[in-house]
Image (tube, rainbow, N blue to C red; front, side):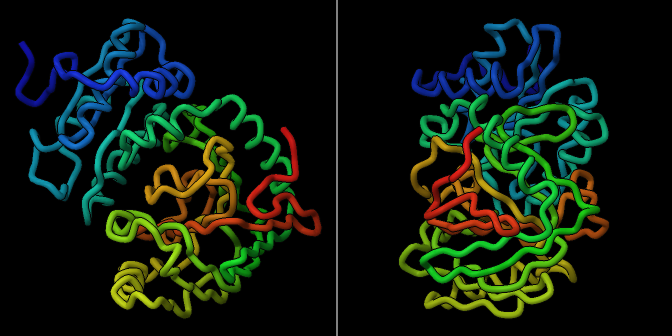
Length: 345
């Protein structure tokens, strides 16, 4: 008999079109073995996708336990439910397929703290939906991984990276040699949990100066509220790695973003500088989980994921911003023109 805290996903029907992406997640990205136990965390919105993942686990014979957040605690979550935390302590792999709600970042950080401490392989699928399962999750992640490794080779010893785009972005990141570059290409290892779909390399910059014009999408819960900024871009000016000004014709967006990036004393710092490497993606869809893997440069303000990059500061918030059609120079070498890589894996 199933505990009230658990959900039997094997009884949930799902669209067969989800299966290729689910197969990719379980077999290519996480490489789950039959003897490994898995914790699945989902919610009512993403239950069908979680069921497709559970079917793949059943097919390889891997034991798993599944939790639906609404069955455990009111949303938005203030803390990670103890039932989930306890189960993760006995799992080698975890999958988080959930539709994010405002002010839930803290509970997700509690979850990834367990992942980091136990060195679990963890697939972070925040705001996963059918479109992402049919697009980004069908990528050839071995090819994405090969490109990501090549980009890491180039940027790993660089001193600065400059990026521009037709929307008006023009900024330079001066890199800190003490901070590590991290590859989250979709091939997930115990060294670093990864978002799925994967396809990026990132670091914490030493300093970013200039202007980033967001003509794609912003992250966290603001993504759903402002899914397409092509016609109402957000302009962010930065000096000494700090936001100095935010401007948009959409004044509500401007205010929301400013308030988010001033939640705590470090929320306005550039914590992440990243290059998207998922070549399967041809356009921004208004979902940060996929759009941050779009070929180009995206940055994030707030938490620098110091456990992985080596950054020695912290923020309780983290929000990505995505632009399009970038030109990128690493030191004096151009590696991208109008959103297309000029390098081969």
